[in-house]
Length: 258
Image 1 (cartoon, one colour):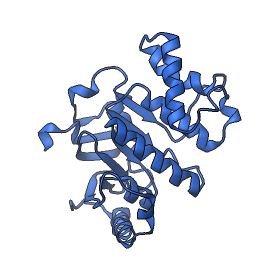
Image 2 (image 1 turned 30 degrees about the horizontal axis):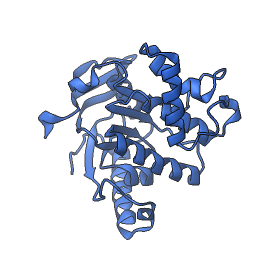
Image 3 (image 1 turned 90 degrees about the vertical axis):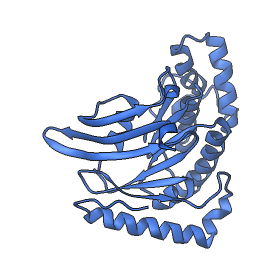
């Protein structure tokens, strides 16, 4: 399946100010797959996303992007902070990527309105970011990432600051939307339970310099119900990932596992 991958990292590494942050990072992502990255703080998870997005270049190794990722707007990015334009409405924030692509403003606004409706914000399209709750602002950021119909969305701990119930709701809404759009998702989180629930696969990164020391395939179907969180299998998989993360805290040489 590797030759059909949407994205491949092969032996990639990155240093900053002489300090090695990432070393020999290799993994692939298939079309429509959800892959989560977990690992100790400072192991380079955000740097991996930035390299894939083209915001920074690897010092070593190769990043191979399928043709589907080369057109403008084919990679969406959702940051930990929603990074919305504070002076603009929710609708205008979501429409911006389409306008930057040269779409007519009326078309862009109509599509933004529809996308916000899918995320339960149909009554808040004219609201400014300061008039929205944290969960609402993150929904706007997700709508903005989806509006260009990307092949890949990169998400960097987007729900970390939200309360548990809002986080659960956004996990489920996001799953439904990315599955409906056939979008691949690379998701960075510090929550083992979140990674367990969302992912088709989970890659565990070692302590800095970060490298993939283990990968796990989750046994869930693509469509899963929120009741999965109460399932004994979910508890067992979460414990398995937690144990791997514990080993990652002390890893110095790196061990590949599956």
